[in-house]
Each structure stands twice: as C-alpha cells, then as structure tokens.
Image (tube, rainbow, N blue to C red; front, top):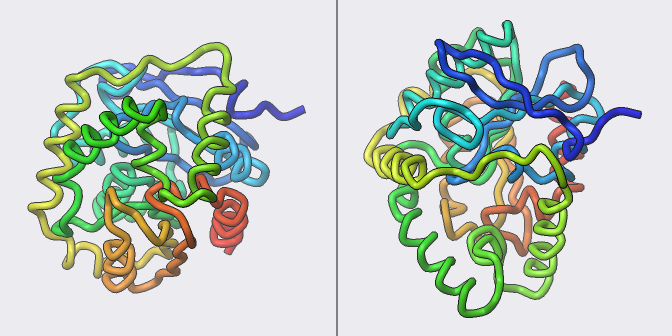
Length: 279
C-alpha cells in the first residue's frame, strides 16, 4: 500500500551547507509537485486531504525552508531570499523540472521562483495569496494577534478565525480540518520559532511595499489561482488581481470560505488541481 502524508518519513538534504527538512508522498517518478507553505507553518500543517489527494497521481514534496520547523539556519526577512532558498533546495534534490503549489506566503515564494527560474517550472498553483504591492500582507501580525485573542476567549483554534468564514458550514469545516491535522502521531516536525515568525512578518510587510506588475506579466507558464470568497488574511480581490496580471491563468473562487478555502473545499480543489496539472 502507498504511504500517506501522515506516514511519510521526515528526511533532510544539505542545501548550501544547511539541512532542509522535507517529506515525499506519492509516486517516485514524474514531475513532482513542490508544496510551499504559509506563515508560521511547518510540514505538519499541510492538510492530509490535499497532500494525499494530489499524491494519488503525482509525486508530492513538502519542504521547510531555511529556519522553519526542522530545517537549519535562520529564516530570511524577505521573499526574494526565500525563493532563492527554495531554488537551491530543488537543485540539492537534483530536480530539473517541477510544478509548484504555493499557499499564502508560499504563493509569494512561488511567484518569484517562476520569475527567477522559469526553466525549472512547468505549472503553478497559487492559493490564498497576493501579488507584491497589494494591501494585506503587512496586517498579518495584527490579524494573528486578534485571532489568538478570540480563540482564547471562545476555546477555539486561531485557524477557525484566520482560515475559515464565521458561517456554520465553514466553522464545521474548520473542525474537520483540525482533526485531520492532528492525525499524525509520530515523527512530528518542530514548531516555528519566534525568530522565524518575526522574520516572516517582516518579509510580508516588505512584500506589500513591492511591485510585481512587470514580473508577473512576463510569466508564460500556466497558472491556477484559487481562493475562498471571504479571505480576510490576504483579501480575495488579490486573487482577481493575480488573474489580471497573468497571461495564461485559470481562476477559481470557492463559496462560503476564507483563506483556507482549499482545505474547506479540499475535494473540489484536489480535482481541479489534478486536472490542471495533467494538461
């Protein structure tokens, strides 16, 4: 039987002298789909329903970039350096062509990878993310603090407020998502450090001050942009803006959902992603 994401062994590879933690799920051949994660996230924060769904057809690689979770080094305070680290990771694994799935902060990293090294990238999925210069990323710290306060007051997890809409349906999806995240019992990743959180917040603020209109309009790879219709972390209008900037793009907005729309609607997202990646 193929292993699932909850059974995948955590491995390390030396990336320019620094160990990067990663896991692999799915087939061992073919063009891999490299998953790039959100602010504060480690390997254990990927939804098994999404990872295992994509892995039914594709080799999936999850990675902690520099300073995150089980990886060594210090997290850079800018997206450009994160993208350079991701490219170095791909090279350390000997990969010459990949597909990218970037969620939130990871979607920003993916945008720069495809601009810096288009020869490495075949297709890109950008979920719950924003182009440089759009408002939203700089407010991440205050949104996180507010969500933590509300979570403490209501006995919930901050992701109830950060990733999901306040509707009954979306909050039930949040409960199911958190159950799935808690299913892995062994070989758990290390949590992010306060230093990493601070560096990522600085990187997000810098991203909001940047500009990506020229770089993104030059991207000629197929891109799938997805989000929930009520993303309060990186506002949904940024997904429409991404679609306007890209030349070969599909846009999918999921109803009654927020920043974590791909987790709430994981069955629809996986089906769309696999169809997009097959072409």
